Image (cartoon, rainbow, N blue to C red; front, side, top):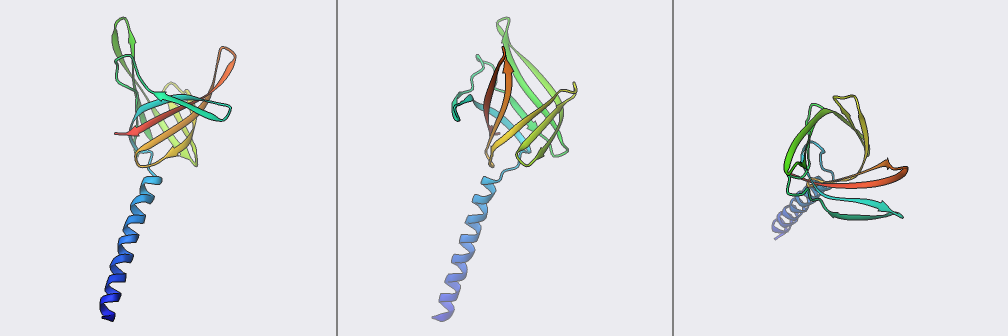
Length: 143
């Protein structure tokens, strides 16, 4: 009976360890891979206001972060009654919660990684438009 109890506890411990490892992986995802834009929004008075990302019938933006430190941004714009696809390439680094994208054109973009799991990437950044500073949010799903 004692051997059976030890075997049961061993199996239970192993099961709990395997379960906890899989949920940890989802909470600490890798930025490497392809990400599709799903939501966009702003931060106003500390609150996020998000809405689904739509692109007038065109495909939503896709970012691909490669293991060698390179990235590809693919996006579409609806102009002249059709979807026009574009890509930009460059290099990326991630230091803590700061993601830096340096484009081939030498432009650099710094983003805050607000959330990163195995399936979700939330980026926050600030920009100015018409003399107004805007805090923006973009949410991506891994594809």
